[in-house]
Length: 108
Image 1 (cartoon, rainbow, N blue to C red):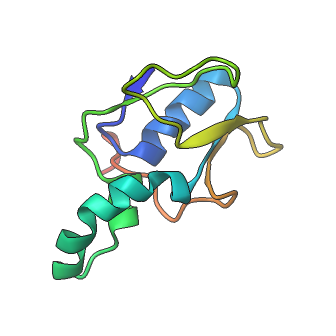
Image 2: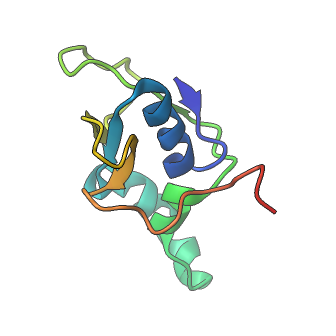
Image 3: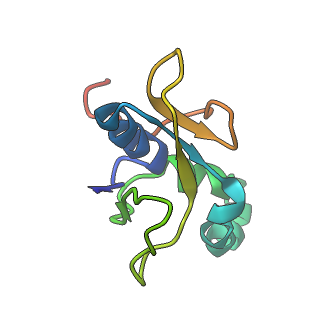
């Protein structure tokens, strides 16, 4: 379990790397978050999905659970754990590499 304060894709990548697996996020499962930001994003000519995937300071938790285990009441499924690829552990969005990852504390 990890907070996603550096962005969902970046922090999901940290879980994947530490676990030796991949994580595939599903945009359709992120729809409630995207819809909640749609009006503001439109006013700012921004992409709400990009905010959901790479925005930081969300202070939400990301965790993985075995497929057969019911999720705790406040959690919801946003993707699946997938086998590690030849390129190594990582995150995909709808099966493809994401355009951006999120905040990196060590990059200037």
